[in-house]
Length: 391
Ligand code: ATP
Ligand code: MG
Image 1 (tube, rainbow, N blue to C red):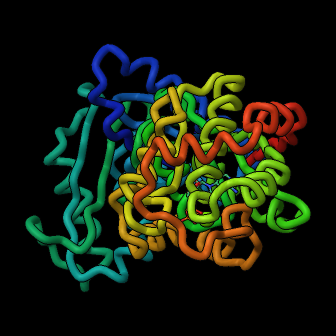
Image 2: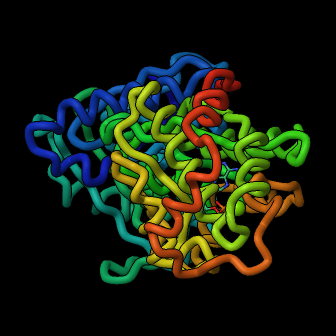
């Protein structure tokens, strides 16, 4: 019997009816994979709770907890003490294991769940017994059943009893892999990593497409994107990154297309290229970090011109988000500090002085004919660079 386990509470997953089994299987697999390197654990699921139980003393519980906090599909997580199912042992363990929180607290109550109906005491009796003992041990405490500072939770299960306080909020969402696969257009900016994370939260497995234009963009800029994706992969799991060289295409657009349409034309080629990569990688949708009105290429008209070249659905999870909301998420995911590092992105080189904010599709289509886009695309896609991103 392990002395301590990590309990994970499932969210929406519990509501998925017939799919529940599949969802749970994917989640268990994701958790096991995410625990790699933290030691040996048994991961099992019983009644909407997942038990992460160390198999030996070497297992790193702090690291495992940190990893579990980033698994989508988990709404809450907590460490719990494991005891034998004997009332004196349960109450003594509660006093010892929860010392820090109980010393801090002013009031508390005990809540008990008993799934082993053969256990000789009923839940209210167990709660009263444990509560009484805790009051003896911590005389400064008082019982408050309505608004306690701390709820001591006792779960009497088939094998053992578990003691813990309320779970901390988990990553939420649904398990990665249950929502299909999509390709995210990733830059070194603030928005696209957050967009990627947001879609992974809804169960989407990610492939990443990045456009680089050396020598205008540097190897350091590329490495920055790798580090951003690494952060995202702590939540999203493994991500394959495909880097497409856009130097020639960008130079041709700069030299041959009307300057004020340069941005929207570039974005159309990005979407075309990304869609082809996506198809090769078995993805069924594209993701971008656009947010309405943020820059000239993110007006309704410009987005319409970009979307016109894509057959796949293009998800823009941040379309209605303010910059401050995106920044807040970037902090939470851990991408903010990396995103603000100053490296050139292919979007920020050759930028037009006065980009057209309301481009009309037929003008854009015409303007684009000045370059041999298809040949340039084929050339760019012939020789891509792939990087495997692991959490
Ligand atoms: P971000 O913060 O994600 O860079 P942004 O606000 O800077 O976005 P743009 O530079 O116009 O806006 O880019 C819009 C979207 O286009 C990005 O969110 C991203 O999805 C995609 N994108 C931009 N640059 C690149 C690039 N170099 N490689 C791949 N995708 C890109
Ligand atoms: Mg950008």
